[in-house]
Length: 499
Ligand code: BES
Ligand code: MN
Ligand code: ZN
Image (cartoon, rainbow, N blue to C red):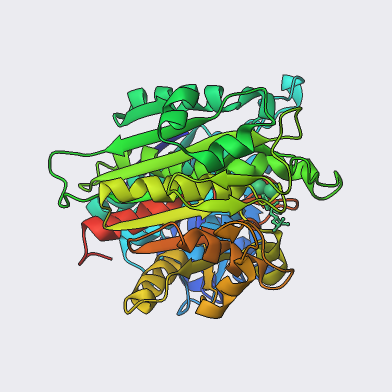
């Protein structure tokens, strides 16, 4: 989809569909303000439009250039936020789909939000709503004809609107990169193939990629990643992405880590199929989010030294598969008693978190579809965020929550009191890989905490990474959760004063 910004008069926009987001009870004033053929069309439709969120009304101007005009409701005009704008743009996209509009104009509404943020939110919402995963649909005649050109209409601050629109497009497209990876059939994203996909992305967007092979991983003694991989016929990889622009403001990197289990059968502790194993192609969604974020960070040319790390393997019950009772010696030198082969994510992450110490990172953030307990606790629209309990813990959590609220990648903190680690005591090794049934997301985080010695934030995205039912601007399937969270976190980190 091509995205541009215009300040032409609304009456002069030659488009299949003009979308006007309008606040509650504001339609009459807006129609008068716009005037001309478009104002007349709005006036004649007013009796059926209040402007509540989710409301849309299509009308057909008898004169003028735009073939169709759609009003979309924004709700209380004094309470419009970024998420409201994303949803309104998504509602507008639905009208565009229904009418098969290929050129669409989207009007920046008057709101308390500045033109840059509003432009970004509208473009994000629109582009993300237009997403469809059609790679495996053979009947191309049935496919929807989508928007080819989106024009954002700004009346005042054109420069800001353009900056916002551009950022919104890049972040939405990078989110779509992650969605595509999650939705991809597992046989097309074996660790080796995933490495190749990322190498291609790095060449395209100008960040460095190095894909470690099995013998590299053996040399680093990553016993967790190698243990999980033992049941597989496909070798593991560790994908290392580097963005280090000459104008970077930091010398020690920000490190992003993503769980890359390309398929989780559970291993010998096999998962049941229904409502469990059937969605486990999404178990690399943390990795996909890190890959998408590295793309966005490079494309937005953010002046910060950032490293992305994605350990990738599948988890299968092969002939040589690791078994409950196996003790693994990890990259850090610690030993882990495996009591459930389905608690594999923490094993591959622990090795990479321990390897990340070598960078002397300023901060490490990991994203992982780590526990079913996260879904039980918070559902599929909010991820769990955890960090070690030191004097800066609240500040790290606040920063993450703020970015989450702004991007719509919502987070909620979980407690990390020391006693939760008791559940991980092992009779035979330094630690075991599962706790009791209680507080499963927290004991998983407590496990990871044993492998870090730097400021660290863990985000469990098991619920929000993959949807069974669609949400506004998120079709069922991979959501790309975390791409915008990580990108905006890194952008704030690079430009501390800007919001
Ligand atoms: N990938 C799963 C967690 C998951 C569950 C992600 C549902 C998305 C939706 C993870 O590897 C897993 O199997 N975790 C186990 C851990 C348990 C054995 C301690 C779980 O949550 O049941
Ligand atoms: Mn598992
Ligand atoms: Zn898993």
